Each structure stands twice: as structure tokens, then as C-alpha cells.
Amino acid sequence: MSEVEKNSAEEQNTPIEEERVVVFEEGLEAVLFAAGHPVSYATLARVFEMTPSKVKDKIFEYAIKYNDPKPFPRGVMLLTYADSCQLCTKENYLHEIRDALGIRKSGSLSTAAMETLAVVAYNQPVTRVFVDTIRKVDSSYAMNSLIDRGLIECVGRLDVPGRPMQYGTTSDFLRCFGLKSIEELPTASEDLANMFEKTKEKEEAERNADEDQITISELETESEISKTETEASEANADEEKELTEESTETNDNNNFDDEPSAEDDIVDVE
Image (tube, rainbow, N blue to C red; front, top):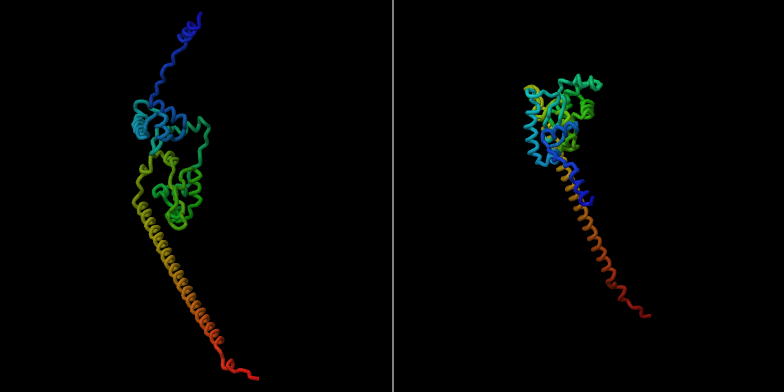
């Protein structure tokens, strides 16, 4: 058999690979299931070669169908956030999941931690001082506990003297409470909302008072500096004047010594 015939036979025996068909919904489910954590729309847009906005729209539309229990009930649900999405198990089957996987029940949040978390969630970004003012106690321990659990985090610093840290909720907070965004938080009661508003107004007034005090101190400092500079300038002028007078007096004395005296006119004739 010639070489050409061998190559032709090999080509005929080589199986032809079928073109891989990618279904967006199936591919999305596979990626989210394998990830186990929120995946950004930007990443999914790169994977499926779409724009982030188009991917987001398709996922939002698919989530409505995916989470509908009528056609096909599922034990998982597709959660969509502002910039990412995730597959999560339904809370209804938490007991079965823990029993099957041998997961011990995690400790629940204390009353202090829940109060602190509520203050941060409804008023973010907030400082620790703001939380202390609302709760009327030191909230350091509760806030550190929430930070360790990943429910709140530092989101910046307040642009005031001392630059205190400001805190806000995290994506884990939304996931734990089954929220898509902060806007889905239940409406705070009227009394609680009034308390938050009054505390904000008080904090703003104190901040403005501190800024005014700083401005007054700066003006006083500038005035003292200007006064000191004026006094120093006057002292230098007096010193220069004294030096000038002394120089003039010295010149006058020198000129007097150089003039001829009457004794210089006497001639010794002996």
C-alpha cells in the first residue's frame, strides 16, 4: 500500500469531532454550581462572549424561570445581585443539608450584634460613634464580631478631623438574609426612622461646630503669627535705627578727632 493510500485510509478512520453546542442557561448553571460563590457579570460576559449588560439581562430573565417552582421544583435557587449572581440551596432544606454533611449548627448572632447590624444596614455608611449613639453603649465588641463574620466591612473614612472609619454591609450579608440589594430591607418603623434621623442631624451639627471651632482656631493662629511678625519687624526696625544712630555718632567723633587743635599751631622755637 502506497503512502498516499495509507494517509487516505487514516483520514477515513479518523472520527469527526462534532461541533460543541453551548446552551447559555446550561453553561451558566454549570459555572455557578462549580464556583460555589458569587460570580460577576463581567466574568460571565467574558466566558460567554457577551457584554456585561446583556449577560445581566439574560440572567435576570432566566432567574424568574429558574426559581419558579411550578414547572420543575428545585432545591436550589438562582440569586441575582447588583454585579454578580450565585446558586444557593433553599433555606427550607437547611436541616437535611446539615444532617447529610455533618455540619454543626453555627452560633446565632447575639442581641447586641443584631442591633448593631441593623443600625449599620439602615444607615450605612456609618461610624462606630454613630452606632454607639444609637445604642447608647459601646459597640466595639459587636462590630468586631460582625467584621469577623464578614457581615460588615470598612467602606471608607469620613472626611473630618481624625478621619474615622465608616462601615457598611457586605455581599455576604445580602446572601445570608436572602436579599438582592439593600433596597429590599423591610421598612424601618416610624419611631426608629425618627431616631436615626435625629441622631444624624445631631452628628452633623456637632461636626459643623467642630469645623467652625477649627476655623476660629486657625484664624486666631494666623492673627498671632501676623502679630508676632509685626512685632519682629518693628524690633528689627528699632535695632536698625539704633545701629544707624550709633554709626552716625561714631563718624562724628572720628571727624572731630581729625580736626587740627590750637596746640598744633604752637611752634617750638628753641
